[in-house]
Image 1 (cartoon, rainbow over the protein chains, first blue to last red):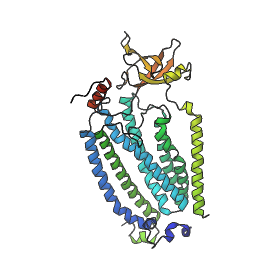
Image 2 (image 1 turned 60 degrees about the vertical axis):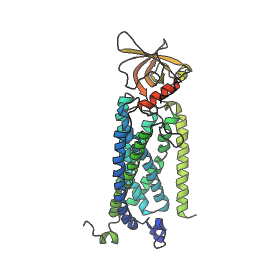
Image 3 (image 1 turned 90 degrees about the vertical axis):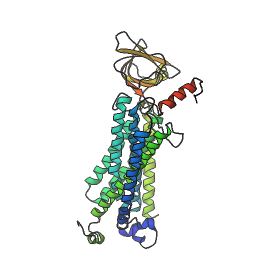
Image 4 (image 1 turned 180 degrees about the vertical axis):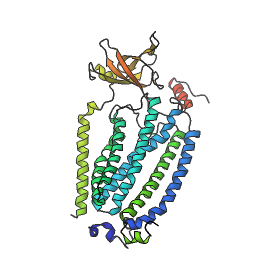
Length: 257
Length: 147
């Protein structure tokens, strides 16, 4: 089994990407990156919150309640983006049989679920004063709720199976199947009549938002990215230690100390 | 073919098959995924008869009236082609405005009036400060912004 994996013949060949596909090599690298991502997350979050609450102007229709978007939109973006990244790692693991890929997928899932929950929750808080309801079963809201269930299902499935390799493969299939839902969420407001409004910011047209509002949202989005990297790397380090606990390099590290 | 390539082909084929299946299913459910009907669709008899459905469109400017009982409001929903009068008894959401989007849930009565049980405001994707909104409103009326 090991002989077929890439990491086995990547040692000493100088290909950094492949070298770091080995958990043993990735563990210290992740440890070095975490403080940087964490620090950047704090910087962007402080800057983003300042712009969001003190610089950005009041909205002409919604007054102050629109400020929920500074949390809601970055969280919703992250929830979809992290799912795609998680599914990609899961697919790598399934195809290339690398050990680290499945660990990365498992490490990303809780952060993705967290952002999905935040997006749904802040959306409900905004919906009540703006639309007049906490929740409606329109295509956007329903598909985002399905995304939360996909994350929770992935976590439940991978933790329910004892053998980590089998758990990874089962989880990978679920993650890959669920990726169909991401374009449905994104385009739901275009394809169908929904209560949820269309995108204010997209790649294909000029944003329909004031510049300072946009700046606050992008800073918050960057903070969410940095936080996600730090959290996922932190979690993957724990997973590596747990899975490789019988390996020599882990025991030499002084397990438990 | 290495096992790695075979697995890649399997995953790609699986995702492609699922994508096609999802597209077909969503296409078949198209009519059920509609959250609201526009006045034109109602006029074309696409909306369900004698059943509750949601009507969506703009509140026509100058159409909102309060009936003498002080609770019932009347307004006209338009999609610029067709219009439907709506009657609603209850509290309107904060963002309910003439000229803005609205979604009303209720039944179309035989007299042609839509009796709503619930009215939601549909927000658009524009976010701007009040000064910018004023400037746009003035520009639409043909006035130049004061410098």
